[in-house]
Length: 467
Image 1 (tube, rainbow, N blue to C red):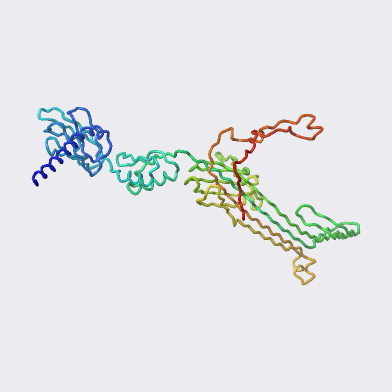
Image 2 (cartoon, rainbow, N blue to C red):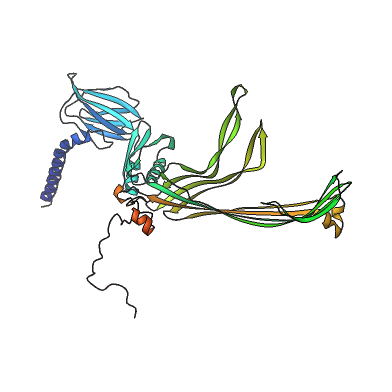
C-alpha cells in the first residue's frame, strides 16, 4: 500500500509539471515585450526576428530555445555574459549598462533565435516603493542608460517632490530626470494689506532778533505775524526803527501734531511654483552714464512692491515665500549730479517663508521707525545765561513715529464659468428723464441677474429645542 501511495503522489506531481510546462509557452509571447524581469524566456519556434530582452544589472535570466543550438555569437560580451548550459538552455548575466545582441545557430549554421539584450539599472525596488507609498498616483519609473526618468501625472506638486525624494534614495540626484506633470495646475490668489501709521509732533519756541543798519527814520511797531504750513508762528513782533538802523524781534511758538494713515491692498494671482510680483507706486528718473560720455535715463521703482512664490502642498496647505518692500522718495540725503536732482529712498523691506493654510493670514509686524530731532539756536554766550538765556535762544523739537504692518492671506482658487461671474455693470440702466428730474435717481431701477426661487416649506420641524 505504501508503494502504491508513493506512486500516486509522483504521478500527481508529474501531471502538475506537465500542466505547468504546457502553459508556459503561451506566456512566452507576453514576456518578450521588453518588460524588466528575471523570469525565464521561452521561444516556441525558430525565428529570425529580433526578440527584445531587458536584463536588470547584476541579475540573470534563463532562455529556453525551441531546438538545439551549437554556436553562440555575442557582439558585446562586456555588457552581458551568455552561457550555453545545454543545447536548449541559455543563461544571461547582466554585467554593465548597455546593449548587445546574441545569435544562436544550429549544427547546420541556420539561425535559431536572435536576442536584442538591453542591460539597465534595476529599478524594481524603486517602483515597488513608489507604489506602496503613493498607491493613488500614476507614476512610472523608466531607466535611460544610467539615468532614471520619472513620468506620469500626479494630483499636487508636493507629490511630485516626494517622488523625487524617494528616487534620490536609490539613484544619485544628478541622474534623475523628473518629468512628472501635475494633473491640475492650481492657482493661488494672494491678498496683501499694507497698514501704516505715521505720527509726527513738532514743538518750537524762541525769540528771533534781526538788525538792519543804516535805515531812517525812527519809529516803533508792535504786531502779530502768523506763519503757514509747518513753519513757526510769530507773535509779539516788535520793530524799532532809528537813524542807526532797524531792530526786529519776533517770538516764535509752534506746536503741531500730524497723524497719517496709509493703506494699500494689492491682489495678485500666480500658478503654483511660479513667481508673481506687483507694484503699487511709481518710478522716478535717475541719470546713468552711457556711451560716448552721454547721459541716459534709468527709472527706479518706489512704492509698495510685492513678490511671492506659492507652492501648493495639498488641497488646503500652501508653502509661501513672500518679499515685501515699502519705499518712498525723500529729499533728505538727495544729491545733484550734472544738474539732475536725484532723491533718496526710504525703504522698509521684509522677507519670509512659511507653510500656511488656504484662507489663513500671516502678519508681518515690528517694522517700527522712531526719529527724534532737537535743535537749539541762539546768540553765542548769551544763550547759555541762566534765566535770561531763554531770551537769546530758539529751541525746536520734532518727533516722528512710523509703524508698518503687512498682512498676507493666500487662497487656493479655481477657474469658474463665465456665467457665474457678476460684474458691477450687470443690469445697469440709465435713469429716465422722469426718474432723474422728479425722483432724483442717477440710474434706473433694475433687479438682480437671477431671481432667487421662493423658499419651500420643510416637511418637519427643524431647529434646536432647549429644555
